[in-house]
Length: 551
Image (cartoon, rainbow, N blue to C red; front, side):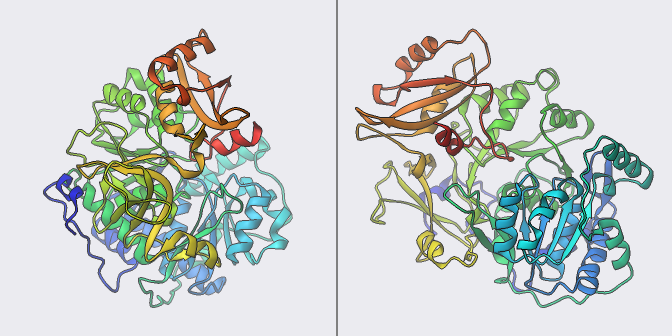
């Protein structure tokens, strides 16, 4: 692999990774549990479990799934939980018996649940008690046979858990239902002491069905194999290896585990290095996240632009920034330079921007930690990963030119579940076509210009919302902004900016004057709208599609 980007690699990081035959996700986690049996593995809402306890509970749940539920290798188990200890227990248990995990957003509507459960043919569902009433509406239209219900209190000591669950019921936050369900703690008790048979799990076996956001119609299930996930774990660990110490890291996990970013990086990547994962069930309001820096010696965190921006603007965070943070990782959406610079000014810690997508497990690029690269770059391909910039005809483009980013590596998905047409459109000759417009400079650093579908065409000129957003958010009176294209009789499309004020004195005239100085004519927003908040996914990603639908 003689590629220009390898010159940016730290000395200790190899250009390739090895994926040992005979391994699977569960075997790697089990090895960590044996290596650090008495160390804290998972912490949530003041409750911690050690690696030994984590493995034991996963064994109990695996025995229950295999013996009581008769869940077989290759069958699907849906996990519809926030960041609580039951999530990693369920996922590890499922991988121990070769079941396929279907990670599901807990805040899905019944319609969204129905599509994902029916499409995946999930047989078992582990769900938080807050959402069972939504399940009741659609379960008849799915193949779900067993429903295992858990509560926030289930992860806590008996007296504390009972108290919390009772309070939530009194407050009316736990809906009533008429479904026949099994309690999570009862399932663990039933599996305790029972043996389960470990199936032969191959690297090419599917481990996870990770559904995409569904921005263009119904969401699709990316088939991520044990090899895909392990490859990304190894790539993440290789990239972090010069800066972290095995068994010493404390990892803040505010991003949801049902999202592939937190699942691969925080859970599987850092937990298998012996790191303690601090789970945050409800990161917003941002005070919920900020207070954890004073409670725990957090050394690593992941987040997206909106999370870092919210922390930057929190009084407590500004007054008492984290003292033990080695590095912070950003992904999921573009990290705005002003946000990264302010976080670095407050904490002394640089935000390392990376790039990935569900179909690549997800990480394909990351900035080298040892180099002070200007914000805006997604860095270089991680070990064993190739990347190119192609035009619409699939031809490789010259250095510095904008085209579609395509990637190839062991982390690229097997394909889309039961969707050969979409698979063929996305993966060609082993290359994954990302749908993101990008460019590469002479150093091998890559830059995402924008999503292909988000690009605005003004009088034949390409306008990339990320660029316009980065300019507007640098205005001192702007908190957040999102830019879309709207129809225009003269130019075909025009730029429209939705702005959340940081200072109520901000006016449209202020922004027009500011953009006139910073942007060429066709890039400047023709329309402005001041809004109280921007629509966001549960991960915190700004949803431009929702703004387009309302315009």
